[in-house]
Image (cartoon, rainbow, N blue to C red):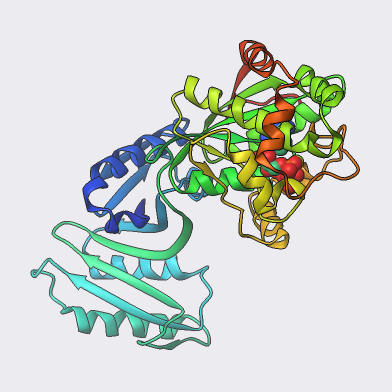
Length: 392
Ligand code: ATP
Ligand code: MG
């Protein structure tokens, strides 16, 4: 009995015009993710089929597929011949290790030479299961388990359990975005949510050595590595922010230090975005979480650019963000206690309702265009690839 993986697409059905793009990018993403396995991939407008050469790899392959956005669900499908006894034996074998209390059988018979009608075959297979499995009963309206049998010209296909996958759009469909990635809890979650909408990520990290340590940078690399489970190769741009921060510290009214610092971050992020042909910036800001994330602060900070800034976690509670962080496995790394450049030189009373005019006035005290240009010229870019082990 041959195993085939059947893939049901995500939100594709509602996006008719982009169907081909969606399917082509998803195909490419699947091929990339499974490049170390011997597979054969075929597709049509509604489904994709993956035949695998080595059955032992089935579980591993399914785990990988579960992390590919654009896949709604994964069905393991068994192919056998049209011999009735063989079909029955296969059904017993397939359902042997699946637990359910209520079930239903749906047969589709496109091969009219097959001697038993669909409804009758449902009854035969239903009876077979009732006889061979303990404590189960038929429920045609709301079954826990549905066994589908398709009898075609040369073969019969038996569909077993449907495994939920990540949904969303294939990464790349929506274009590219720059994720401002700190070592905290929020920004990796923001990155994950953006990828889920089909946005290909490049990450941007501001470090301030020696005020921030190499461990803080390693933590960010580790987070990128975790995110690369979803997007196999992610670029990380590292900006040395020390000079800018020290200049802010020396010259700017302490209450406005964070506001100005974040305006500088946005200016740099926007340049990096432009240089790397991305269309948007993504960050992990959440309304009201800290002084720089009040609506007033957001307004003033955002004012340095007209580029769309997507804040996927803007309206989530911290508890909700943490829940996602745990689910995607970034939480344990995020809570490692290394300082971020936002937390050093932290003033006692960062302003929560900054004024734009004040920012403009204070910024005159800095030669910030020059400082920004220097920082961008010294950008260090590394590529973090899935399956490649780093020693962080
Ligand atoms: P996080 O948990 O993601 O660190 P946070 O709640 O600590 O977020 P802030 O430190 O104010 O909030 O940062 C808000 C957002 O700004 C972050 O989510 C991130 O997108 C960006 N950011 C902050 N620090 C950095 C940094 N060092 N490098 C890159 N982006 C940063
Ligand atoms: Mg932070």
